[in-house]
Length: 492
Image 1 (cartoon, one colour):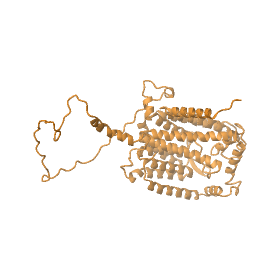
Image 2: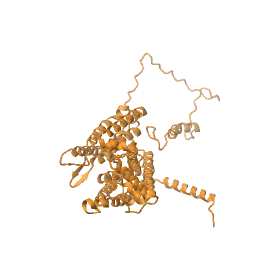
Image 3: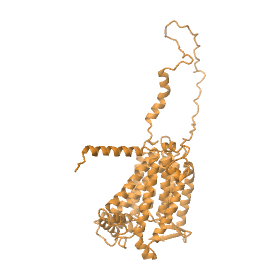
Image 4: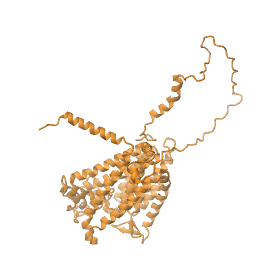
């Protein structure tokens, strides 16, 4: 029997690390990772929605495939949005951000119109258009990410004031949040606040003002949580013993924990969940991670968690490597939004956070959520294709690989807008204070002494080294001070 030596393990680890470094150094790695993560999440989400919704769908509509069919239809539409967002020019995305925001505000207003707005579960959050039920608050998330990034990308935090950073972003965000909270929908309202906070943080808002806004945000969240009895019951259940009301506010969290415990290490098998047989409400939506843990076990849950961690790394990598301020802000905000929703959902399923009703991105059942999340993935893919190295790699005569198969247009290199300076010329000195230049002295012939002489470089002679360094030292110093992945406002 041959024993594995420590040197073999070390050499294998070095080989693996070098392979990962070489892979991450390729110019299109970010784009390929975003597409790969999206495909895996979509496939896993459809599979788990079919498994988790079969029992409830058959009990309500007599078909085990009703919810699955609806989810497939919305995912298909979402993939179309992904493709359109991935191939749209960057400047067109900036211009279309304002119309998208206005459309989302109009849809939020139409939710309150009787006959158009659909109520359910004590809230009016949906809009029925042509037989399709949409949730406009989900559209407001991506609209605020795009429009907020377009607004702040035109403001340099080193020169503009705090007022210019806050307006008009803050008033518009308050208006959108007000239309969402009156539905009522506290979880989406808090997500909108998180989007604004992320935009302001990466946009360069001073730290003391950001801390003040964070305090107001937390205080408003606590006040909204205690404004409704069912929200307060969730908080009391979370901070209590967990066994105070096993058939009330504690029922869903306890059933989710039971499902995770039944899964064990490798799970009970796909489709073999017990909690989905009307033991766990909203098993196909808010608590689908519990079904994943029960059927796929701890291994499946860790794989899902690893996918979201990898998504966060790739999204922030795209933001760090982007030279376009609009793409940088939008990529960072979308990444934080996806990560926040994922970890809040997983957090309240495993019992470390109070139940909020936030869906698990891509994996949970929800038509409008699938549309908006896939559109966000398309925006990230678009930003990944506009990294400087990716632009150079795709500027050849014919693109190769996935870009060629998807028939995506060649990305355009970022060109910084020309900044016009409004500096007034310095006033001329008074005539009385002006000094006339002394008359030039006649040149004297050289007598071998260097004092007072001016030596001109002969035509065709090579310049001295000091003269060359004087021309190149300034730009070299500037390139040394400014890193490739440094934000304009100094935050990474």
